[in-house]
Amino acid sequence: MSEPIERVAVQVDRLCWTGILLGLAFTMTNVQQFAAAGAAVWSLAWFAAWLLDPMVSLVLLAILRAEQVTARHGVRLGGWVRAAKWFTLGATYVMNTWSAFVAGSAALVVLHSVPPLVVFVAAEAVTELRDKLGTAAGATVEAVAPAPRTSFAEYMAVARKARKSSAKVSPAWVREVTGCSRGLSSKLAAELNGDQR
Image 1 (tube, rainbow, N blue to C red):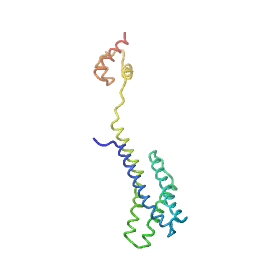
Image 2: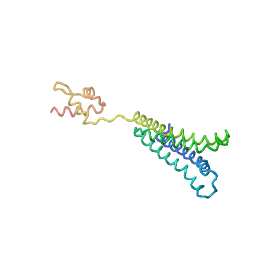
Image 3: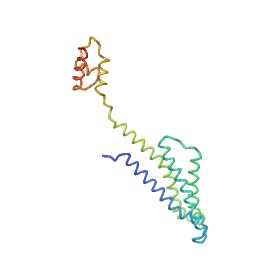
Image 4: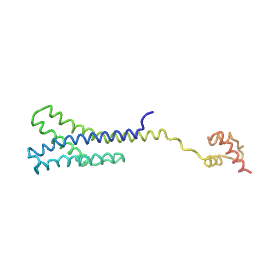
């Protein structure tokens, strides 16, 4: 038996967010070194440099979370939101890779490019994944939802409406006009014949 889509959606969501958070955590030290620019350890400039990456990352995470929630409700966000997301992603990438580009080391460029690029891709994918998994879960529920049951009173109302004064009310006639089961048709016919007395 396959795993329920809702459970898979929760797992996918958690894994994507964990990857995003780990990617941003990895970039934090590189951004701090970039911002500190050789400041003495424990100095005010060194401490202040630790604030730069979380400032950018928290704004990015807020935007990603808002995008995810609004997408579930079919609400499109404006251009400023998208611009803010890409600006924060771009700023994280530039600050994380700057020293690698200056050093001219292809290995360092790759090393420092992978985490921000994973964050870029995951940031775009997480909202769409959640949206599509929600759509799949909705389609599954619709596909397996049982047809609503028709009550005795509803069958009786249909039969009474279809009955003409000349009609001979029998279980077969009741089944024909209402589409009810064989067992129920006898009860309906008995009650309809009782109406005529």
